[in-house]
Amino acid sequence: MSSIWPAGPRRVLVVGIDGVRLDLLPELHTPHLDAVAAAGFLSPVEVDDATPTMSGPCWATIATGVGVAKHGVLGNHLGGHRLDVFPDFTTRLAKAHRRRTFAVGGWEPLFLARDGGPLFNAPGRLSYIAPLEDTPEAWEVCDERVTAEAEYVLARSDDDPQASFVYLGAVDETAHFRGCGEDYRRSVETADARLGRLLAALRERSTYAAEEWTVIVVTDHGHVDAGGHGGRSDLERTAWIAAFGPGIAPGAPVGPLHHTDVAAHVYAALEIVPDPHWTLDGRPFTAAVPAL
Ligand SMILES: [Zn+2]
Image 1 (cartoon, rainbow, N blue to C red):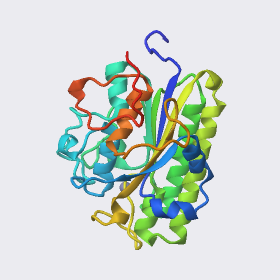
Image 2: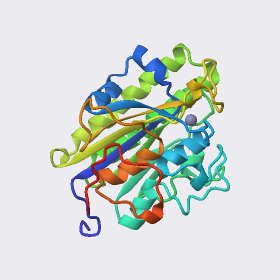
Image 3: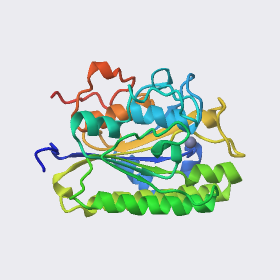
């Protein structure tokens, strides 16, 4: 079977943590995110003027590498989207490049045909794990199960996804219910511990030493102090990207980043040159795009 899947040593893991405020990170105990930043960078991203500071449009931009004018996702109901023309990276890589891909999480429109979704339409492996209630506690349970599922898939070299997306939603849910206080801060730290488990799962792979991993951690938007987003305040518009991997010099400054750059960097990290017809709006985090 391996001839069907031109693996090579490159692998990418994208961890999406919903609604993590950049300004609070220095006060929080997030050793695993700190480690990602130390091995590469952590840099702010401003949600652009055309994009509502809502999860649907922001995750669509992150996953597709194009802005709202192209993907057409303008709210948390994804209806009217053009994701058939501008697919998420797990779907494009699986279909056009025969790469193994994987997506997992608990927010319906990202993974299910609900609310106009799914954003992640047809990865090679797809896991949706429902939160049993719409509460912060239920979302922590959901994220725990999402993490366990991702650990299982990522650690086993036989499944071997080359590009994966893992979505954690409890932080955002906590902010919506309780504002950005102690519970929110604790939830960010819990998400960081889950990030640590995902990084450990990569290192557990029997083939890890021969592989070249890129890890990208990204949030979609911020929150006002009372919890909530959708407006144009700096707190809501400020997101961030952290990443390490081939071509990213540890601690070196990166240029102004955009959410569209995530998918563009996924392709670059897998040494795939985007077809001009994809009309990606983003660019890789580094200028060094290997030629095919
Ligand atoms: Zn969100």
